[in-house]
Image 1 (cartoon, rainbow over the protein chains, first blue to last red):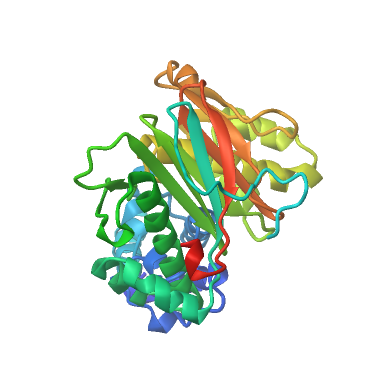
Image 2 (cartoon, rainbow over the protein chains, first blue to last red):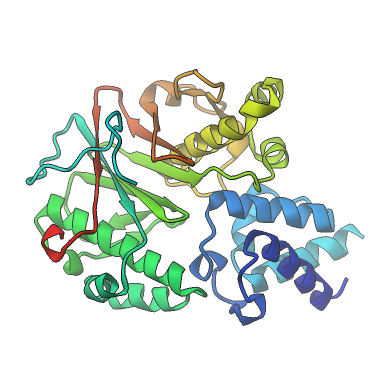
Length: 84
Length: 254
């Protein structure tokens, strides 16, 4: 998968937990929790959603790498393309 | 959010004194008027105001400002300090602490969808969590992925109608514990177990790598209001809980 394809998946999953947000307007380098009112259960839903969509196992220790959209894309790209 | 006759949330006393065997929890609504926001924003540090500007929605920006102003106001009361002069530093997981303060005061806070809880103690580590209970959480999948084997077994045995409440009770208890420890979501969430069966008191039941943890902490359920679940965990068991409700009414209230 390309990074653009992975980003599209990340935004789709994010859209499920923040349906009202204009996702294209989010700064990919700033923490999602600093831009959207997402609580911890929302964030767990986000991780579960990424796992469902991409089939990537995300260890607890790697969760901080998913704090931003850029971080998600970089991390997931390395994991997806390693698994395939 | 008016307090019902049997609500645990009371109006606060005029003067706040936090004794060593007391734990204080404050509940505050985060929705405030634009004029109140104008009054509250100057209480925040410049970095906090910059952080507020990053929020996508005006509503979230306002709630962040109200939440921070509330934290500073309460800390200022306990410490007899000017709220705007307080400085924080943050642990690896983001847990805030007072910077440069030689104080016995410990605090923790949590917010979820319009409501905030603030907890204060003396010389006792403390963790608090509130979550809005809602049906769009993928409770089954989250439980399987993040709960301990013991918790998953209890969760699966519950009738479907009890699972939503049990899920949020379990999660708020787990998150209160990892916050008290200063860990974030990087903690091994399946390495410890809390109670979650309806009617069973909130308790830390088992910690895989350190069984002494169970007697170190005491965990209690909170009632943040209809549609919310909450929990608090505090070091020791010789403390009593006082729950107070903050009302944004007038400038004289601050």
